[in-house]
Amino acid sequence: MRLGSAGIALLALFLALLPVREADAHGSLISSEPADGLLLDAAPGEIVLTFDEATELTALRLTAPDGSYRDAAAASDRLVSHRVTLPRATLQGTHVLSWRAVSEDGHPIGGAVVFSVGRVSAEPGIEAATPRPVAWALWLARLAVATGTAFGVGSAAFLLLAGGGRWPGNLRPIVAGALTAGTAGAVASIGLQGLDLAGAGLDRLGDPAIWSAGLWRTPQGTTAALSAIAFIAAGLSAARRAKPFALIALGLSGVAFAASGHAALASPRWLMQPAVFLHAIAMTLWLGALLPLAALARESGDALDAPLRRFSELIPYGLAILLGSGLALALVQLGSVPALWQSAYGQVFLLKLALLAAVLALALVNRLLTSPARTGDPAARRRLVASITAETVLAFGALGAVGLWRFTVPARALPPPMPDAMLSLTEGAFSARIRVRPPRAGKLQLFVEEVREGTTRLVPKELILTVEKPSFGLGPFRKTVARNDARTFAALDMFLPMDGIWVVMLDLLIDEYRQVSLRDMLTLNAA
Image (cartoon, rainbow, N blue to C red):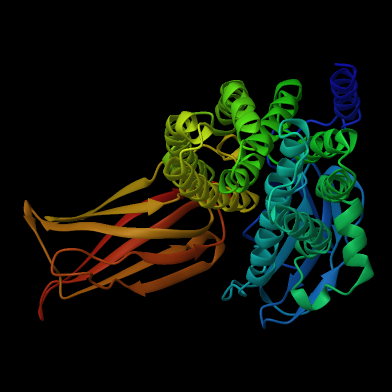
């Protein structure tokens, strides 16, 4: 009892030491000065970037119209508004300032501000997202950490706290392998996080500055360090059969998950951080019991009886904590039911939910097999091993799905969707309907939904769409509308660099002798 009380006090102390920071949003750029998409007479010497929360700029790059680029200095201050001195721009045309920043939840965000000097030209291609090889490596590192937590820390804690401390069969090297993989993943994630902050590729992984940034400039550095210490403590608990080390490893694993991430640093922090901690602890103990139970079921005798009985008695409470904390996290992170299928975050949640539902179904099967297996029925034990093995495979898939959240934005932090703009272009008996998505400056799509002569639907021989802003000398931007089939038209991708009113014209070639021009006004919101 005294050991349990000490463990609870230790975990409470760890929770108290967590950083007292809140993040109401994922972090996003809300304005720039000069504004995104603006046409300027001369190149600006500086630009002001304003975010919806305090952020730290980690990389800045100015790309010229000819595709050449120069890096700008990024101050290490965490501010809402950043005043950035730009490299001197000498070419006329469209320039792109791409930026990387780290928001309060520790996840890098990126974007770009477009401005034109003298005239508008083709926009240089800039990728603001995490480089794909770095993203894959980050996902693998997170999966390794989750594996070390569930099947390393969890298995060691279950055996020492509920399994009597006896290591069955070849389980010890499996747990050691999980802990080794977790430690390697935690260490690697520090360097990979630094690459993500800088928007750099894997070729810079040997740069000490990258590792320093990954460790000290985001909460994920704290998570990685705590996870690595937890894996070491779990290894010591296995080697010495020491329950205090198992408790420390379990507590540190929960604190590591609660120290960073979308959910842990969301508001209200008093609810979210404990919910993440409890969710991680319950998940670790549940999944950590699978490998030991399967190993014990393979052995003869009554070695399985006591651990299986304790697991059966305690798992309903663990699942109640798991589901309760998971529900609280989902309600805050998703914000609404439609976000389940309308956001990438919600889709990952549904995937995780489906995999865990399958694990729970197998757990119910295991519960039906518990009594015969405890009586020593060999066939029942074989079925129990097969069921637990399938449960472990599904759980591993769920851990992989959780790693995908690293690359999504919580639905609560997404801006409300902007309704499409509908244009009705007319000239005499001819009319057309065009949908614009989204109706704001920057990259957008135009869909010609239908063309009519009176009440009759037309399929012209040729369609040419033109967009211009004569008052600012922008355009005309002209594109031919291709057909999907005999009755529908393909979407057009366009880049319109400024908000306000644009003139949209649609030239119809009805046949060899008739050509009609339709027009309407399109109002774009600021980017």
